[in-house]
Image (cartoon, rainbow, N blue to C red; front, side):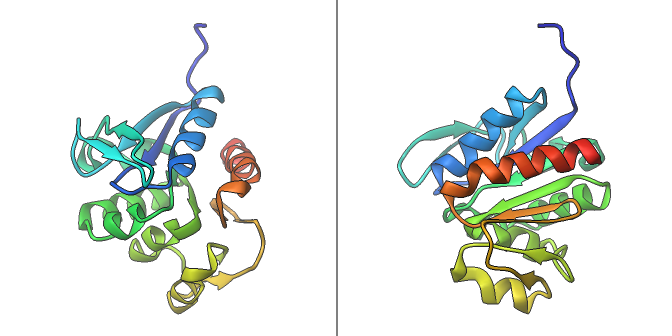
Length: 175
């Protein structure tokens, strides 16, 4: 114990998230030595996955200084469609990105960086269902399990989580 934190990592939460796409990154970031906060619309609220598995939000978007965020992960499922409707979420993601955070999105999670307006010109992947959305927002969609473009890391589906998290951790080390 007594190890110094590698910095702040944020995992976004809203109802109907994909269970593995929230909890696997959260645990991997904790294991790697990050101070991990689950951030959602309401501090102390419990959000449930598509399968009913709960997670409690430690903080709201306004509680966290985006300039302090080293890693931000957006899980997939139906949660990204809810998260992108909060202007404060989109501002938070855009500000963390502008401050140099690594931003990871998996499956449907690309909707959040789209709404934060940070995907233009970026090479990205996602579940095929939002390919057109990414392309229409100016991203260059690539059909690969995981795509890294600088500090933007994206992946397609839960089976890609190991390569996704390795890429996020590698990008954060380079940052």
